[in-house]
Length: 250
Image (cartoon, rainbow, N blue to C red; front, side, top):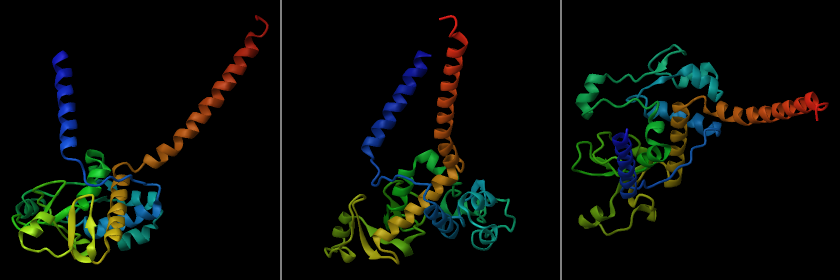
């Protein structure tokens, strides 16, 4: 038991040391009570992510119920691999071929924010940069050596590391003078969205992924104060009943 406790303490200290050496470039506080944001995130996930990544622990019908989206709209706009509203969200990409194309099968993302945290997911989506040495031409500050291409490049544009830009002899300012101070990356080529618009886009996407990891969280959190109030009232009633039973003895 003592050895186990020492080992766990060592792992905890190692994890803390790693976190301090590799801080995330951005922080993000999810808000799954912001229904329009989660709805937009669901739309964007299906449009940009579901082609490669499944959410096998979440059903389309649950999205319709929780997010207040009519089932006919879910079928029309969010379902691309099935026509059954009760099905799980599965990618159409063949697992074996995808492992050959990308070096590994794209992971299921249902519990990604539970496993890594919302900060990690949000930072990852905002931290792609050009890296000619990589097979797909991009790398990521949060997950170096990532095999995933930057599928959102049309929206964000292309980012570069300042030192790499100088090494190539490009001393001009980044486009529009925009710089991502959190990541230290510079926007070399703008996308369809401004930097602020892109951050809102990734915020919506992260909010949806946080919701997907625990669909019942909002109901559970809202139920908590009601339960506490019920217990307080019940405690007062029991106390009053106790005093009534024992009044003649005292």
